[in-house]
Image (cartoon, rainbow, N blue to C red):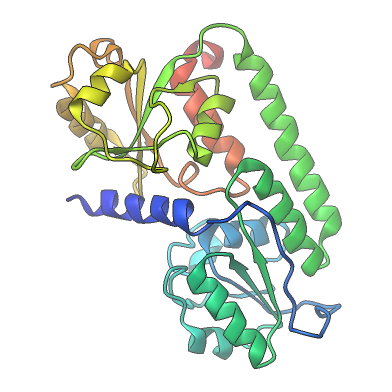
Length: 298
């Protein structure tokens, strides 16, 4: 299988599993101690957390990031502390942080617990839905004394989303099949933040309720879904031309599906739509351009 599809699946699994829980957020400092009043050295334990920290203006304070923290480009120059799925506690300690920002899934809960027991301060957030992202930004900002920056960031993001929502509100809502992986075929279900993005972009999910967040489906379900638009996020490439050609060839066997019939198959860059972070608007706008190109002619 194409290595980029494996990477995308890994990231989606992280999003689907790494943010398990109700979406509630929890501040966690060292047990029995308050977070430091002046935060000067921060380790980020996930790519979207890295983006949040940069967006809050904490560039200089970041002393460690995980693999795939590639945005903004400056993040690539930060020391690596393992992956969000397999954090390297020795590398975290070597960075001498006064704050470690983690997600709430099991591996990182374990990391945070071990760090707290030896005296390090941790803040943990769960980001499962769009609203959780806004809360997470505010939580991280409060720990790093960047409340004003967080308020502006959240306000700007919401204003852009509201403007886009008004733009796509009128007219039809095309049915969207969001493809995570082609072989075996796996798609985004309705109990996902991907579904939220589709709806915010003026569409609806072609897949009905499912047991799994990202269910495998067969050809019969593809046909029954009757998608008007098929979207495949690509990973790690500026030029998606070849992947677009591959997608057209793959979907050609489903010629009775409206999206295939009308050549509405889109491969879009995946970095803004495969993680919940400050570039949320850019991701939703990219989807909206596929669904409602008439609104973006200029």
